[in-house]
Image (cartoon, rainbow, N blue to C red; front, top):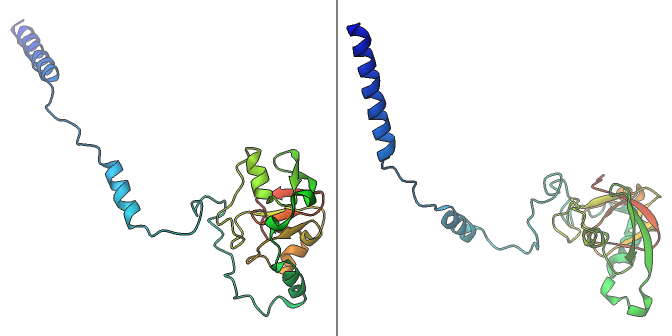
Length: 194
């Protein structure tokens, strides 16, 4: 019986000590939150860029497979004529009374919308609230690439700038939605690259 009383007394004392410990607290306090300060220091070390949006937002890693401007010269062959025709294309030069609208079916989004011939396909899709892939918004990568199911891209759009797609890619129906302006009705699959 003595052992049982001693065991009960020991357990009671242990419970009292543990209760007093937790009631009093450990005295430990969380350190000051320095996350905002760290973010500001990191931001100060990153050089400014000309990109209007974060470069890593696109699907596929930011268009790492893009060919830098000027490196593909000589490989264009017969497509150079088309590039020269589009070289001076500026959608801002289209007068208000010359703006035309085309029915563009966004296949993956499941909707058809009207897009003006002075509005990029990417902007039109974003105005609908769709989260479409892109990175540079300048036609210098293929992050925003889309596929026109109806035929060669040149039959349905004009690029204001195209530093990434080759003539073969455009012949297969690929376009850069950030700088592609419609010239006809067509069906577009976004997020498709050559």
